[in-house]
Length: 309
Image (cartoon, rainbow, N blue to C red; front, side):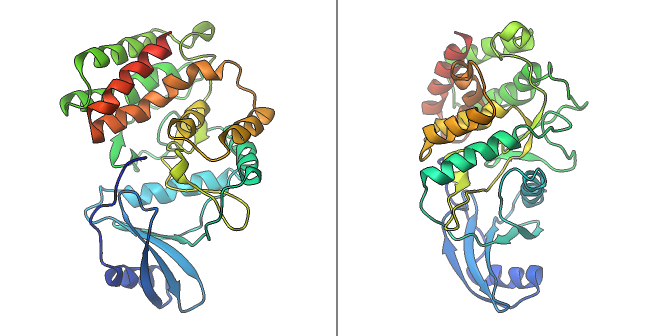
């Protein structure tokens, strides 16, 4: 999530020991690097010649890194996008292959646009998390799942209202991150979604079956690489709506965004998508209202009003 800062974690020395156990190779010095968001992150060279990326979080919620590892594997399994290889995961540490960063280029962005179009053509079995044993998080905020799986193309509007927007809205209200007027606008939007917003190309657009999505695709979760192919990192992978990934890319800006979106729509056109961007950005704005307060709460109200038209 954009704006989430690093938290307390293990020392570099402690991380090196954990990495040795997971990789079977003696590590060198653990060098702190950026890119861990709420975690501490390290670049570690191993005695066998490999270089790995390790991230840790002391007191991580149950299943936190297992869910991230599973999300990366879900994305990889589609064959559509590139992700770092998962080397090992435990309760408070995740080890991935090291991907050498590079400059964002128009060529990488166009390729990523086509790859995202292919990813979003990959069906998911249900809306939300695909493994009931593993939670889905946006940053440090868990997302609930319905007790009975939902999988129909007509189910997304009600699912999104009941299991994404409203739980986040309640947390934002309870924490003072959104005012009453803006909260009411979000409630109005949820009422419209729950009452059948997908019908006839209404608030939610045409029906969409669940697709494999990254789930938290702000620009910081795109790793531009030296080898010319962007990797996706830090997923909240799940069965979701493809337009949410694209809208989140737009929310905080992304290099060569117009080239990326144009390449995407050459493969997978989305008529009328521009008008639905506020709807698909609202979930992430609500998470930021939960974490960072009322400045984002006001943006939630604006987005809800725009989505309602």
